[in-house]
Image 1 (cartoon, helix red, strand yellow):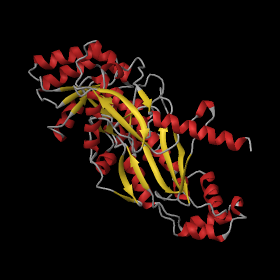
Image 2: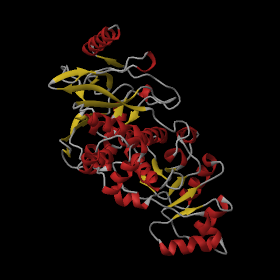
Image 3: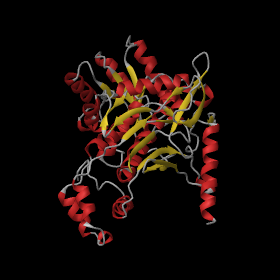
Image 4: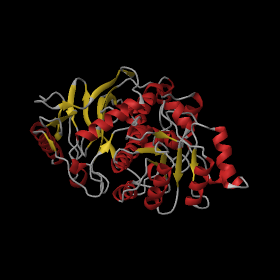
Length: 450
């Protein structure tokens, strides 16, 4: 399967594309990507996935065999050859504005805005939704886990729980954007320039005749980086064996049992041995709620490994991101577009998000406005990232994206950082947007009665 195949889209995107070409519907369109509602107990999202989206837009192509496949598809049997010739030279030539990855996002706010020939914008919908939805979901979960850890390291252990190898890479990347210290996924570390972490498995200990031998040989191989797993047989017995050997590891890991109680006991014994710099690492089906409870109980844990809850967050396994047409330009005439059904209404027109802060620098509120409206002191969150199908500026490092997320979280009032209760951050629409929406409603009603 090709990574940048134009077939990575839903069939109806291609049927609409063929329809536009067949009916000579030539237009430049603007689409916006946003979420209507947050998942339960979520107060914010963390934007992620933009780098992969831009890479796809720059490289998406239709190969001859892919075009032949479409020619043979029954739905295209009445489509002229012109459409298949168009696909043979297809390139994305549009402009993209987006919130930089690591930015905090709230409902209704466009994370990304695409302006392009309508066929191009239409075909890109599926990939953009899939990539930004998945990574934003993971980054947002990671930010909650990091918040619960209160300054202790969080490492992604989700590679073996993700839904496929590609998902494991993007989950590791997004978890680091959300504030994680790094990942156990070695390929993700290489691909995205992230820190990688590892300890040892229970199988290493069980493979040896004696637990002490397992510890000793591992220390022989990794004298400065060994993190020894304590709970294969008995935590306290394992700690006593390590101390008796007199060989200090870099850290020890607890993976089961009463983590709070056992970590305090382990810490006390390590300190008595003069090993105050030996780190205590914990893992074992952890999430933000379990970590918050451990911190609240005074657990002596320096770092947490989190797998399933990051790669496949059960409490919010998907985001309902949507990609909606907001403007159409044909023959030099601009017409704003909106969906008007009561349950799923959208606002028309190209938009900008303005973020306002207090004099102390704390985030106070956001306003969704028409692009070009005066900011009146608000920070403009959507920035130009692609012009005429080419990226503007180099890709940002994952570490830089992580710093942006952590800086944003530090400026978010405490009530919106809580992990147990939902608090609604104030987001309003500008008066100009409200007036434009009413104008579109009147226009639609006028045509409806003709």
